[in-house]
Length: 99
Image 1 (cartoon, rainbow, N blue to C red):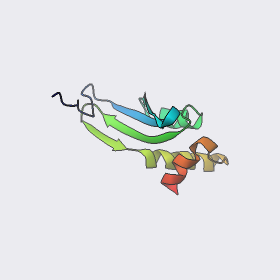
Image 2: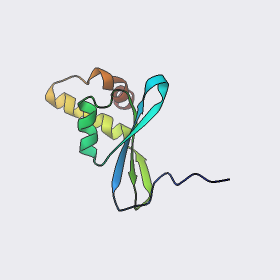
Image 3: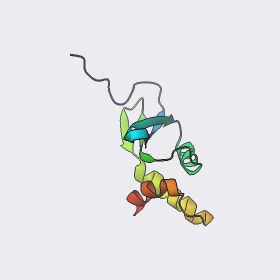
Image 4: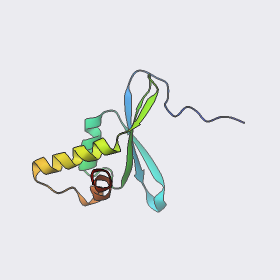
């Protein structure tokens, strides 16, 4: 019986951000980005309509971390600074983590 591959791939020293998003019929879709700022910008621009979790992986050091709370706080902070409310499609994601 074959085992599963390691959850953090081995490669060059880089951190990859993965957005887990609910899709049709509650199927999770995964989208990779290469930096934290791009994740925030993509979320605020509506590229992700139903994010569930944001996870960072480092391919050389083999660590992973759930950054969902950090991402939600950053989105809330930027919306507060700009005087906008959190977009409707992000309310559940941000509200459940910033509360």
